Image (tube, rainbow, N blue to C red; front, top):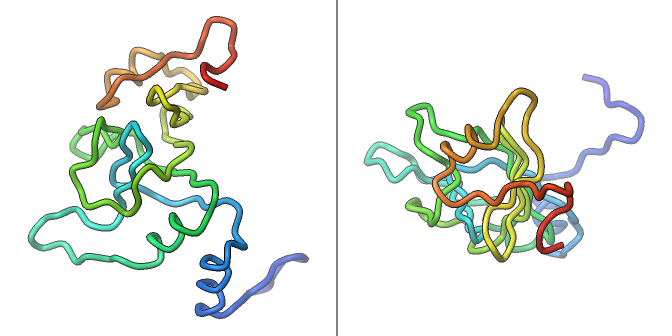
Length: 147
């Protein structure tokens, strides 16, 4: 393996010093569920055979100022991952700022899920039907509500 210019490596323990010391500005991680208030659940499915994986994500959401989530919009079974409230154990309460899915980009606002951008060929109605909470549409003037 060859690192590109500007790349760096550091020890696992140093990563926690960076996180807990407030030296990371933005964190991007996956999610099992995100609630409309920004609650994040990403460490356990709650099924009897699941192995809990509590760990670094809790440190990240507690120590980083901006949290972005990248996830599929729905589960393999078609259930929404963006919900009114999480049913899985929380990684962090009210920590998510923005969500990137295969269907859309969505911000967390005081009013709930605010649509920012649709994926090419995807309609608002299609995304709204697959979101487990109210989805605020992009305003007609293209500006975001509440910003």
